[in-house]
Length: 293
Image (tube, rainbow, N blue to C red; front, side, top):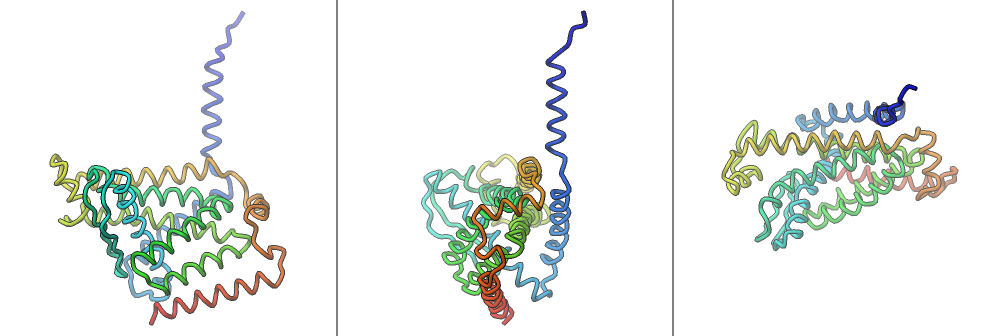
């Protein structure tokens, strides 16, 4: 009588299930293509400051990613019993977190790694409309606190708030998914480019990697920059994989589910929706005008 190796069959099924889970469907392939386009567009906007209108729209997101960086330092400091003296975020996208005490081995790399982790979470949420709704609420609160406490730029506060409201009402919240994805991709790319610029391409004495190298005393800042860069890229890939595995619903199914999860007022098409969109658009355009001025 032949002997059936059940453990081998189970192993084969597990490999097949893992392959199925990691294979993107048509909706996810569209999301991946859009994320790839975001990478190209963000790279262009990041290094071409003369595209005034579009640059103003991305300036808020860039400032937010710097806020992620500084707030990650502060959170790590609080968790390691450090005393936070001040957090600064300038409109020129520079930031600084001043603290005393704590554990430098944790607080110094927390800026880059924390902001890349946040970006990875946003990328994963960008694969699903309902997850993007939850992420946008957290993101809006974080954005308001960051801008008000660190730079108090009212045009950016109103502009980003109006953008979130506007995207919430477009196609039942589908546009909000791509906004969350955009911010997530930008946050991860900021970490990659900043690490490369500060530690690999050129050595900045005031960078987190340089301070960390002085603390540990065993490796130069370039080595720690490469290590953090690899970890940041791993977070980016992990965010994509989590999104692919966790959110398999099609666009139609996501749209149907979004009608029952924090539904959009007037989703059936009444006048309240168009009025809200009109108001949000007016606020957004006014904020852009202030930034351009």
